Structures are given as C-alpha cells and as structure tokens.
Image 1: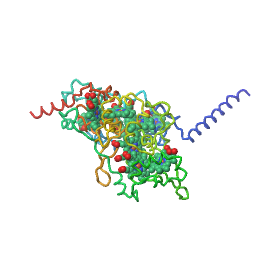
Image 2 (image 1 turned 180 degrees about the vertical axis):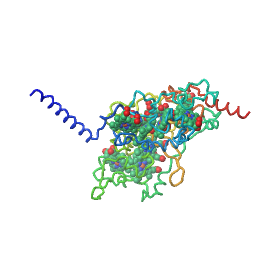
Image 3 (image 1 turned 90 degrees about the vertical axis):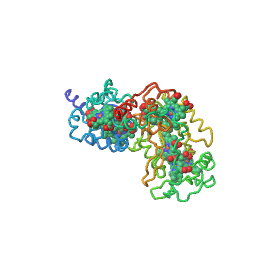
Image 4 (image 1 turned 135 degrees about the vertical axis):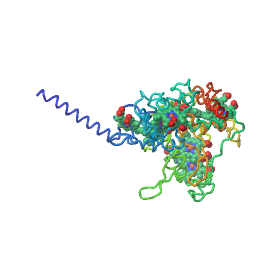
Length: 450
Ligand code: HEC
Ligand code: HEC
Ligand code: HEC
Ligand code: HEC
Ligand code: HEC
Ligand code: HEC
Ligand code: HEC
Ligand code: HEC
Ligand code: HEC
Ligand code: HEC
C-alpha cells in the first residue's frame, strides 16, 4: 500500500503541472519561459515571444531588421552587414561576427547588458581596429574603452561625428543668432487634397453632430471641441466617434483610440507606435500602463495607460500643453523635473506668454518630438512631427543634427551631450567636457594641405 503513495503523488503533481502550463499557455502568458528580464528597449513587448523567436525558439534576424533596418539605414550605419561580406574582412569576422545582430545584442541577460542593449565588453572595437594608433598617431593615447564612450564615435550612427561633417562645422558660434523653429505643416490643406474631409467648412457649437443625450451634461466637451483646430477644419464629433456595427449600421462610441486618429494622421500614428509610448500597440498588446514603467513616473497614476490622448487631451487638442505640461504630468526623473530651471524653459515661457511670438522656445517636444523634414510619397518635402520619441534619443548624438544644430554650434552641441551631469540638470549651465574631435580633424586636414 505504502509503495503506491509516491506514485499517486507523482501522478497528481504531473497532472497539476500539465494543467498549470496548459492554462498559462492558453492565456498566452509565456513569461514563465523567459530566462531573465528583457532589456529596457524590449521589455514592453517581451510577452510577444514570436516578435523575435521562431516557434522552435531560435532568433529571426530578419525580425530585428524589420523593426530597426530602416532607421539604421537612414542613419547611414557605419558598420552595416555588407561591409563584412567583403572577403578581405574574413579574419575580423573570426574574432567577432558583426554580420549578426545577436553577436552584440542578446536578450534576457541583465548581468551582461550595457547601455543600449549592448551585450559585449565595451572595449570590443579593439578586435577590428587594433592598428588604429599606427594608422592615426593622434589616437595613440586613447584606450579602446573610450572609442564609443566619449562623444567621439558610435558603432552604428556617426551621422554627426564623421570627419567630413566635423570639418564642415568648424568654428561655429555656441549660440546662433535669431533662430526660429521650422513651421508646422498645413494639415488641413493636405487632407482636403486627399478628400478625407469631404465638406470642409469651419464648424461651430450649433453644427456639432453629437449624440442627443450629450448636449446638456457635457457642454465643456463641446466648447473645447468648438475652440479646437478640429472644429475649425470641419472635423465633427462623429468623424472620431462613429463605429460600424456588425450589420453595417453607424453607431456612436465613447471610446476613441489611436485607430480612430490614424485615418487622418497616419505619420503621427506610425511614429508613435515605433517608440516606447506606443510600441505595445504595434504588437497588439494591451497599452502600457504607468505602473509597468521602468522609468520614474508620477505616483498615484499606476493604472493609467498610454494613448494619443495622454498628451492631446480631448477635446481641446492643445499642442502647447502637449509639449510640456502633459509630459511632466507623468515623467518624474531628475532630468524632466530640472527642465523648469533651464534657460530653454525661459525661452519657451517667453514664446507661449506672448501671442504671435515667433517660435523660439525649446519645449520637451522640441528635443523629443522634433520637427523633421521628410519627403512624402507624393514627392513633396514637408515637416513632420516625429512622434517616436526614441527616434533621436540614443545614442544621444542623434539629437545633434535633428535638434541642437538649429540653434547651437557643433562643438557646443557635442560637448553638452557628452556631459551626463548637464543632461541631468536639463542643460542648465555650460558643458564641463571638451571633446577633441573637431581639433583632431582640423589638424589632420592642415597637415595634408601642407
Ligand atoms: C525583442 C526580441 C525578443 C523577445 C520579444 C523575446 N526574446 Fe527571447 N531572446 C531574444 C534574443 C536576442 C535571445 C538571444 C539568442 C541567442 O543568444 O542566440 C533570446 C534568448 C532566449 C532564450 C535562450 C536563452 C539562452 O541563454 O540561451 C530563451 C529561453 C528565450 N529567449 C525565451 C523567450 C520567451 C519565452 C519570450 C516571450 C515570453 C521571449 N524570449 C521574448 C530576443 C527576444
Ligand atoms: C559589433 C557589435 C554590434 C552589432 C553586430 C550590432 N550592433 Fe547594434 N549596437 C552596437 C553598439 C555598440 C550600440 C550602442 C550605440 C552605438 O555605438 O552605435 C548599438 C546600438 C543599437 C541600437 C540603438 C541605437 C541606435 O543607433 O539605433 C539599435 C536599434 C541596434 N543597435 C540594432 C542593431 C541591429 C538591428 C543589428 C543587426 C542588424 C545590430 N544592432 C548589430 C553594437 C552592435
Ligand atoms: C517588433 C519590433 C522589434 C523587434 C522585432 C526588435 N526590436 Fe529592438 N526595439 C524595438 C523598439 C520599439 C525599441 C525601443 C525604442 C528604441 O530604442 O528605438 C527597441 C530597442 C532596441 C535597442 C536599444 C535598446 C536600448 O536599451 O536602448 C536595440 C539595441 C535593439 N532594439 C536591437 C534589436 C535586435 C538585435 C533585435 C533582434 C533580436 C530587435 N531589436 C528586435 C522594436 C523591435
Ligand atoms: C567586426 C569588426 C569591426 C568592429 C567590431 C568595429 N569596426 Fe569599425 N570598421 C570595421 C571595418 C571593416 C571598417 C571599414 C574600414 C576599414 O577597413 O578599416 C570600419 C570602419 C570604421 C570607421 C571609419 C568610418 C567609416 O564610416 O567608414 C570608424 C570611425 C570605425 N570603424 C570605428 C569603430 C568603433 C568606434 C568601433 C567600436 C565601437 C568599431 N569601429 C568596431 C570593422 C569593425
Ligand atoms: C478628434 C477626435 C474627436 C472629436 C472630433 C470629438 N471627440 Fe469626443 N473623444 C475623443 C477622444 C480621444 C476621447 C477619449 C476617449 C477615451 O478616453 O477612451 C473622447 C471622449 C468623448 C466622450 C466620453 C468621455 C467624456 O469626455 O466623458 C464623449 C461623451 C465625447 N467624446 C463627446 C464628443 C462630442 C459631443 C464631440 C463633438 C462636439 C466630440 N466628442 C468630438 C475624440 C474626439
Ligand atoms: C477626420 C479627420 C481627423 C480625425 C479622425 C482626427 N483628426 Fe486631428 N486634425 C485633423 C485636421 C484636418 C487637423 C488640422 C487642423 C489645422 O490644420 O488647423 C487636425 C489637427 C490635429 C492636431 C493639431 C492641433 C493643433 O491645434 O495644433 C492634433 C494634435 C490632432 N489633430 C490630434 C488628433 C488625434 C489625437 C485624433 C484621434 C483621437 C485626431 N486628431 C483625429 C483631422 C482629423
Ligand atoms: C501618460 C503618461 C506619459 C506622458 C503624458 C508622456 N510620457 Fe513619456 N513615457 C511614458 C512611459 C510610461 C514611458 C515608457 C517608460 C518605460 O518603459 O520605462 C515613456 C517613455 C518616454 C521616453 C523614452 C525614454 C527611454 O529611456 O527610452 C521619452 C524620451 C519620453 N517618454 C518623453 C516624453 C515627452 C517629451 C513627453 C511630452 C511631450 C512625454 N514623454 C509624455 C509616459 C508618459
Ligand atoms: C508624448 C506626447 C504626445 C503623444 C503621446 C502624441 N502626441 Fe501628437 N503632438 C505632440 C506635440 C507636443 C505636438 C506639437 C509639436 C510641435 O508643435 O512641434 C503634437 C502634434 C501633433 C499633430 C500636429 C501635426 C503637425 O504636423 O502639425 C498631430 C496631427 C498629432 N500630434 C497627432 C497625434 C496622434 C494621432 C497621436 C497618437 C497616435 C499623438 N499625436 C500622440 C505630442 C504627442
Ligand atoms: C534640449 C533638449 C532637451 C529638452 C528640452 C528635454 N530633454 Fe529629455 N533628454 C534629452 C537628452 C539629450 C536626453 C538623454 C539621452 C541619453 O543620453 O540617453 C534626454 C533624456 C530624457 C528621458 C530619458 C531618461 C532616461 O533616464 O532614460 C526622458 C524621459 C526625458 N528626456 C523627458 C524629458 C521631459 C519630460 C522634458 C521636459 C520636461 C525633457 N526631457 C526636456 C534632451 C532634452
Ligand atoms: C530653438 C533653439 C534651441 C535649440 C533647438 C536648442 N537650444 Fe540650447 N539654448 C538656446 C538658447 C537661445 C540658449 C541661451 C538661453 C539664454 O542664455 O537665455 C540655450 C542654452 C543652452 C545651454 C545653456 C548654456 C548656458 O550658458 O547656460 C545648453 C547647455 C544648451 N542650450 C544645450 C543645448 C543642446 C544640447 C541642445 C540639443 C539637444 C539644445 N541646446 C537645443 C537655444 C536652443
């Protein structure tokens, strides 16, 4: 009798485990199989294992390229795969196979993960550029640890750091005079061309095609809308609030998410889904809540989730509020809080407190959601507001071309961004670092010209 007991126990435990795993799998919760925490860049989408893994759990390199390839190419990646298909570089690949992303970026290994998801020791440039001191005597005293850590080089994106670029920007003043930001696009005109808004005319309160019951109790909503650029552009309540029932009937819905904005604002929606504000929606996961964040957030808002509305409060859709007030209602780290002491904030206040003031202020959005000129599919170059706030965040030299150079010289910009304390104080005061790259480039060109 006694010898049956362990068997019974074993069977019970096994069945229990099977039921447990089956349940977890059924509920799509595969977090159980994660070997460790996922990097800051990817933890929001970690539950979607298939985003990176094949069903047998190997890595799909193509997935990395599908999400990052276009940005790396646009940044003119200094070490793209095709640099290493040249047979003359075969010996280098033996030391480090730079054709594969996962040589340098593996996952779920926090003990060996450095900034920006790098999982190699930081002096790895050594493997391929051992001879650099011979090729460039100016580099004799630099350690390999410092190549990519000191504002001089990056592995991928050197678009503001390569030699020709430095030479073009020698001797610029720290502060460029009389700068105003580039204008925003004329969305109204563009959408009219697309005939998305068929009967364009400015609307007033009387035109609101809202649900009958709303009028009395929600007058603030209607007033906000009537004063918004949506009403002025002829966008009515049901342009956002209509939904189709299964039988094809148009119904009213109170909830409007990003899919409701996408028809008219495709670029903004796409950008937003690529960064840490909207990336979960791009994988059809539930929106990110503040409680799930790794960065410091304002207390007491744990259950709130991210949407277009996080910044563009309905129904006023006020862009000035979206550019500073909204951000600080969530973000609570030293850098974000310090902004309000910075000279940039002074400039911003001057701008918003005076009507018709030219745009000379620097808001959170000026740096993090910059206005970038891009060619649209129709061939026209227009300014877009880049809604992926990770697009120019890391390595931070990405911000030089997209933001700082509009108003500052290159030397000042490089120095400022190489100074972590200055970033922490949100650019209050002068940089305490001085990066020598521009001088090295100058000396080299002077030597070759002699
Ligand atoms: C953003 C991409 C990404 C997502 C999402 C992701 N992983 Fe991974 N995972 C990786 C990479 C990259 C590696 C490293 C592969 C290597 O070393 O060959 C890895 C490795 C692993 C390993 C092997 C660990 C080891 O040390 O060999 C396991 C197990 C794993 N992942 C499980 C999961 C599970 C389970 C999920 C979903 C809950 C998941 N991963 C989601 C990218 C991802
Ligand atoms: C030899 C090592 C190495 C390989 C191979 C590599 N990376 Fe990187 N990656 C880095 C380093 C180092 C950084 C940190 C920033 C820098 O120095 O450019 C980085 C940063 C990044 C970043 C964030 C910063 C940025 O510039 O966008 C992304 C995204 C990225 N890598 C994607 C990829 C993808 C995708 C692949 C494969 C096609 C890849 N990397 C291959 C070393 C590597
Ligand atoms: C579904 C899209 C998606 C896939 C697949 C994906 N990434 Fe990412 N990755 C992101 C997003 C979104 C971020 C966060 C925003 C950013 O930093 O650009 C990110 C961030 C990163 C970073 C920066 C990490 C940091 O801490 O700053 C690196 C490096 C990176 N990814 C490399 C890879 C590599 C290598 C793979 C393939 C194993 C991969 N990614 C697969 C979307 C993806
Ligand atoms: C796997 C090998 C490999 C690694 C690792 C590597 N490089 Fe390179 N790098 C190359 C190759 C190949 C070239 C092409 C020119 C050459 O043959 O020297 C190159 C070119 C360069 C250039 C010339 C600029 C350009 O755009 O052509 C710079 C600067 C550079 N690397 C810096 C670095 C830094 C900094 C690191 C470390 C963060 C690094 N490299 C890591 C292989 C590598
Ligand atoms: C540009 C798109 C847009 C337009 C136009 C618009 N709304 Fe909304 N509305 C939203 C969004 C976004 C929300 C927030 C939805 C959520 O949080 O789920 C919302 C929420 C609401 C809600 C429910 C939440 C609340 O505020 O109590 C009502 C009711 C509402 N709107 C009525 C109206 C009326 C009436 C009009 C016309 C006068 C209108 N809306 C015009 C986008 C719009
Ligand atoms: C039917 C088309 C349509 C829909 C749907 C729509 N918008 Fe708009 N939106 C417009 C037009 C047209 C303008 C331009 C007004 C102008 O240029 O004066 C605009 C302007 C804006 C602006 C700039 C406001 C300003 O004054 O600076 C924001 C922000 C905005 N929309 C956000 C949203 C969000 C968020 C949603 C979804 C909740 C949304 N829109 C849904 C058509 C639409
Ligand atoms: C509703 C709250 C909310 C609002 C409003 C908001 N954010 Fe965020 N933000 C977040 C969350 C949550 C994350 C993701 C944090 C994480 O993954 O740890 C994030 C991520 C970021 C990141 C990426 C940080 C990184 O290390 O990758 C930047 C930059 C950022 N936000 C800037 C802004 C700016 C600028 C504004 C205003 C224009 C703003 N945010 C408005 C909640 C918010
Ligand atoms: C982190 C805050 C934040 C989030 C989230 C956000 N926006 Fe914006 N958005 C802004 C700011 C700030 C501006 C104005 C920037 C400026 O004036 O340079 C803006 C401008 C816009 C504009 C005007 C574009 C133009 O070129 O004039 C549209 C349209 C817009 N947003 C739509 C959206 C939509 C749709 C979503 C969701 C998919 C969204 N926004 C999410 C902060 C945000
Ligand atoms: C003059 C440009 C500038 C302004 C203005 C600015 N930032 Fe930043 N922000 C940066 C730079 C540069 C970084 C650092 C990127 C890096 O080195 O990783 C950064 C980093 C961040 C991060 C990521 C912090 C982390 O620990 O990963 C957040 C969140 C952020 N900023 C939010 C804000 C908010 C909110 C505001 C306004 C209250 C703001 N920023 C104003 C330039 C700016
Ligand atoms: C729209 C123009 C504009 C942009 C964009 C801008 N700045 Fe500034 N910045 C200024 C002006 C003007 C001042 C001087 C304000 C004053 O002293 O009253 C300033 C001040 C500073 C200061 C403080 C200098 C001091 O002496 O106290 C630093 C540091 C700085 N900026 C760095 C940056 C960096 C880094 C970027 C890019 C991430 C950037 N700025 C983007 C216009 C700009």
